[in-house]
Length: 271
Length: 136
Picture (cartoon, one colour):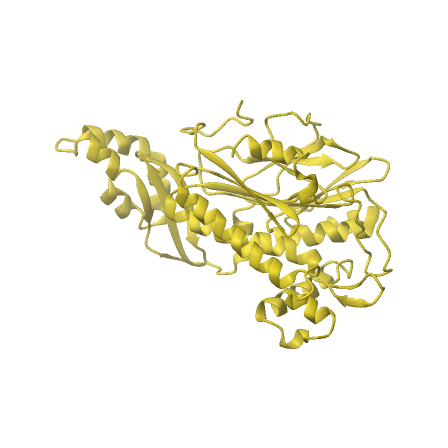
């Protein structure tokens, strides 16, 4: 396998690298670590701890598990105001996400019967993955210099601690043909999130109308933090083609929108 | 080597110097009279070193470096002037260029793939699973 980018001087192209995969929240979650101890058991334990944190968040926030704390809030058995601080923190982030997206994101969505209920799912996944990843990067520090990437069902966070490695090379897939890759980018630290319906045909509801958004095939957002890249990708998908103007106002972010006719629009906010 | 590193880690400018001169520092370590023998030299020139927090006009800055066999492989600011983590991440982050090239899915040059949410059921057929399998 060839190295995609000319590495910096003193590069160590043969650094150990290891992938770890777990199925959590109904998603395949893969973590790659590269660095001198990537294949040591200690690193495997550090990764497993992040997987355990994600399982704990799934148990708390799942709207599919009927007795999860969030399910109990949804059906009125418990109140959000008295919920665990972690749930109230997420609810506050959801409020902030509503403000930052001009209400294109909301945690108050209709359920299958059309009743509006608390549903933080659209924010929780990116947020929980980012939290677990930040924890992993911190734990890896004690083992020396390691780079890491996490990919949770298509939403990605990367971190490079090393200075002698190539940036992580990330591809954005073509929503019309998932065996093709539409754009590539190189990132040492940051996140990429994609919203779309290609994978499971599942609808993303426009909170303003309560009906599925259809203006785009996919919206990908690149930014410093996965929580917000994910929220902004969801909001851009809901806004449709007119999201371009809004995305251009987001400092530190870039985006790739794919229209129903396959047209690709790249947006790069002014620095 | 440890003493050299620790002493120089005192200031940010010291870190820059360390970067500039790590090659000469290495040769000094191997050629200096009375220097440690090769084994001890190797073990003492690897490790993680944390500098003292330095006051700057923007606030305290503290840097941690990792040395492997006499070469700095990592430099990380572990304390920033602004404790806000969002700012820390943005400090380390630059908006990447988006390459317009269409890459064949079989390309081995991709580390990971972003797309509409993959379910656990669809994972085995996904490109990501192929990439993961190459590194398990």
